[in-house]
Image 1: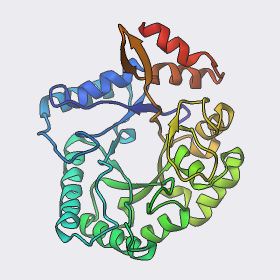
Image 2: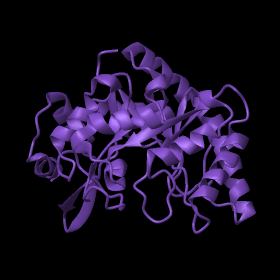
Image 3: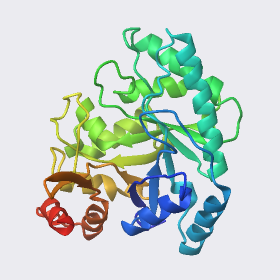
Image 4: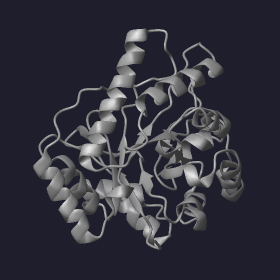
Length: 305
């Protein structure tokens, strides 16, 4: 596939379901998208509406968009790395099992997951707990794939290095159901220099394997390389820079890998109130044009004033 596969995070509501997510993505000029099936900060989930799901699938088929490139993101509060509270650990496992069932019902093949934080147990124990939990969750050969996300390394996060993710992947019995989501902000903050992305990608391929790369979260960073902070910036307005991100997005070896923007909403003051608006339509247009627009943020603000 030669066409750039690019989209962003979009909302998913109980009323419009997958159709609402698709319509939002299309309004941004995207041909794929990522969503949480509920709020990212909790595990409350409503029923999936079959009617809106089928309507979205038919629309995607009509437009030639591949639902296999659409991503679900698991809530970031789920933690498989710490098993000290057995009730919470069991809940995380059962919730993720249900989330994969929801993904299957929606027709989505890939679910991105933050590996978790060991919270004082140590990296080795944290990795062991993640492996144990994932093997319980991925207990059949077929079904949606879990994509472990590369992390910035703040606090006691697991997944700050390719080696840590490789160690988890090695312990998973159902190898077809485990992959990786590479986040450009996270790996920058973890210490991988994206000014030399060819080297970073070669390292990823050597340690994990490019066949395990399921998707890329494209974000600039507000932090210096190696800061371990995880603060996303808009495309071209951070320390990674537009040209370096463009090399990631258009890399020959990543042509068939979906790229997802998770950049910050733009704040606009309206009638003495601050509101925020998504930048994705403008950022996707800028990426497709392959030319940096230094006035992009201001133009978004002016558009909404």
